[in-house]
Image (cartoon, rainbow, N blue to C red; front, side, top):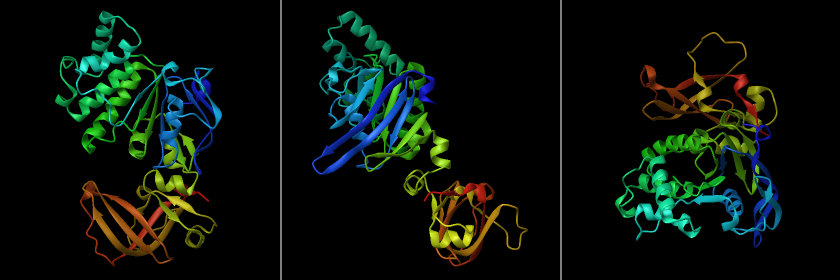
Length: 342
C-alpha cells in the first residue's frame, strides 16, 4: 500500500526523543495511510514503542511534529487525540464486568447509558464474545481478555488504533490464531492499525507495510515480501527471519564480488553428487556440522570448504534426511536469490 494513494492518517516529521544521554528516536519521518495495517518491528530498545507512545501523546518529542488526519497534535494531550491504545497487559479493571470495562471510555466522554450499552454490546459482538458482558475479566481466558481490550478501544471509534505488543502474553498457538483474527477485525472495521512488535512472524503475517527499527531509526520500510526477500542491510537480513550472511572474505570466493551477501536458508538446496550444473546456479561444498529435525523440515548447518557456514532448510515432504555430522554435502542456490547488504 502506498500512503500517497490514500489520505494520510499519521504523519511524523523529524521526530526525535532522548532519555538523558540515550537517543531513543532519531529523526524519524513516516507516513501511514488511512485504513492501513502498519507494523513497527524491531528489537527491545530500537525506538518503536517510544514512537507509538509519542503518537498516543504519552511522551512528548524533543523535536519534530506529529499529525493525525492532517492536524498537528504534537502539543495536544492524549485525551484530545482521536486514537486509542491496546497494551500488552490489557489494563482491564478487575472489579468491573466485561461490559462495564468496554463502556468505561464512553462514560468518561459523557455518552448516555442506553447508547453506551448498545455500543458496548455491538463491540462485544464484533470481537465474537456476545453474551459474556456480565463476566469479570478473571473469568476469561487470555485470548478473550485480549479481545475485550480490543473491544474497549474500538467502541470509541478512533481514527487510529495503537497496539503495543498486545499478543505478547499469549501462548504460541493462541498467538497465531489471534494474528489471523486481528487482521480480519482490522479489515472489518477499516480503521488504521499501528502495531508494535519484536516478533517478525507477527509483522509478516498481519501488516500491509512494515518499518524495521534499529537504534532509533527506520532501517527499512516496505511490504512483507520487500522486507523479507530483499533486505537492504545486514541488520534487516539478520533480524527479519533467518538469513545466511556471506562475509566479504567468503563471498569473494563464492560470488566473485566484494561485500556481504544475504541468502535465506529455504533458497538453498542440497544437490546430488556429480549432478549437472544449472546456469546461474552457485554451488559450494562442505561438511554437515549440525542437523535439527523440526517436523515439517530439517535445519542443516554446513561448514564450507571456503570458510564460513551456511544453514539450509530441507522440507521433509519425502521423509527426513539421513545425515550424520561430518558427512560431505553439496549445496546450491540461484544467484538471483542472493542480495548484497553491505
